[in-house]
Image 1 (cartoon, rainbow, N blue to C red):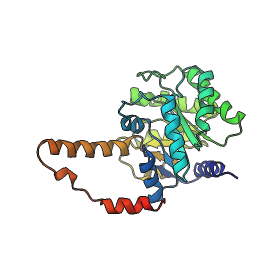
Image 2: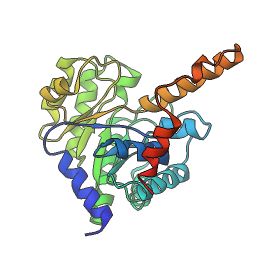
Image 3: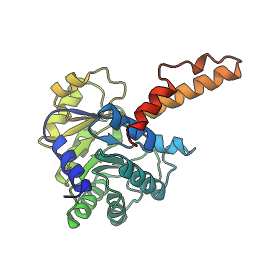
Length: 272
């Protein structure tokens, strides 16, 4: 069994029982650090990638993502699941073609959003959104790839009150062949528990966004995996901006930190 196949098998098994956290590094260094810290899998972040190359979210290309994923999959031994935005295509045929391309990077899973591929604040109507998930499923199965397909609705990010509609979409996506369901923006226990029941026996992923819940509490609600999106990248940029602003104000207090260069060198040295 190849290393890629082994990672895919391991990642799929992680969705069968328990609850796990997916950190989201944004480059090879941060990906390797998550491995060194002991995480069992990682998720990429389109926002983190975009910021790292000086662009806003939704302004990255398919080529950007494919290059990014290939470099990370090559440098870490963990299963990598990709933030594949809206599949970089509107029609199901285009999604299918792009899925073939992204799977070849060595990823163990990827998510497809129902947000308009142009990055607007609209989502596709239900029929088209479902057909796009079906196309992704068929593409995966055609080549026999054991890749986890995550179907994501962004409805709650656009209208936080649309819990019922978001849940209906997740159910439709599950029936269309998604392995895992994801609705960023769900915020309270009752709604999370309701989504878990609605998509069962398929697993639900939850984004830590304004959520005052622990891993244990989310596990008790039936959540299988926990995502952080661009959260880690945002924290890193916040620290950089804060320190830079201090420097503009003639203060270098922002350069004080809890992690030394020696520690970082030692951690990264373990990959040599």
